[in-house]
Amino acid sequence: MIKVLVAGALGRMGTEVCKKVCSEEGLELVGGVDMRAATITPAEGVSVEVSTDLEAAVKALQPDVVVDFTRPNVVMGNLRKVLPLGVHCVVGTTGFKAEDLQEVDALAKAHNTGILIAPNFALGAVVMMKLCEEAAKYFSDVEIIEKHHDQKLDAPSGTALITAEKIAAVREAHKQGHPEERETMAGVRGGDYEGIRIHSMRLKGYVASQEVVFGGQGETLTISTDPVSRECYMPGVALACKKIGSHVGLVWGLDKLL
Ligand code: NAD
Image (cartoon, rainbow, N blue to C red; front, side, top):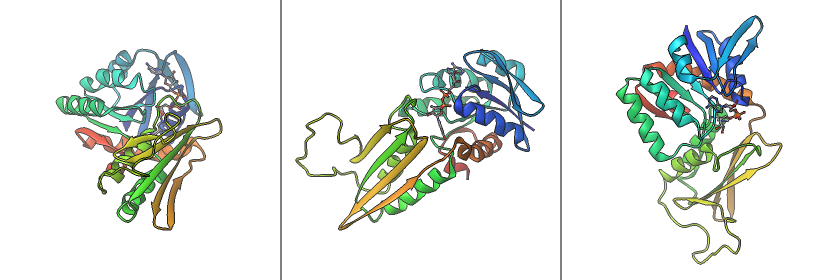
């Protein structure tokens, strides 16, 4: 059995992860951590304590894996506590900067542990990114429109960023649009990742959709993904909990474990 502790256990994603861990063969939920203590019942007959001190919980419960779905401003502090204790990490929290990724990679290697950071655990998103890499070989220009619920704290989404990175890796960086275009309202052309424009919508009603629109001569190609519930992330999280133990250092993106 792989023992799992969930950080952010009372949140929207953490709640789903606790349920999934309880129903998944080979995984055992040993506890949770959040901003307040609670007793949760993620499955019939299963009662688990949520405490408020991550380091103390890891030392007491000795999990094999800590799953983190907390907040962009919290996750680095959590990883700086957990990785030195030699515990593997599976991270869905978004908002990492390039220097954060370097730091956790070094920290994990120094303590002989593995950490997966996946901006998107949904299979649809992973396949969408693969299709985008392929399409980018044939279409020179592309814009990404990501659409999330209005409680999301970071923008652009981690998925939009990793999609842009993957597209940028298979094309020459170049400025898109008219060479002399100018914004008469700040930000209307979106963010710029090596010439790829990223637009972040935040509206009640969305979960986490993304459209990637490629433009060519006389045609466009749109690749999109629409999760309809948070359940779509759970098979990826369970798989990551089972596989991360055989890695050392940072694994960036779920596709590397599939
Ligand atoms: P949420 O606000 O519902 O949950 C976050 C939880 O973390 C809350 O319960 C909060 O109390 C808790 N928390 C805050 N500070 C904490 C701390 N110091 N220690 C422990 N717990 C703490 O948010 P959510 O919708 O569940 O999303 C969580 C994160 O996951 C976000 O960054 C979001 O973008 C990301 N996300 C990732 C994926 C993916 O596939 N990778 C999918 C959906 C959401």
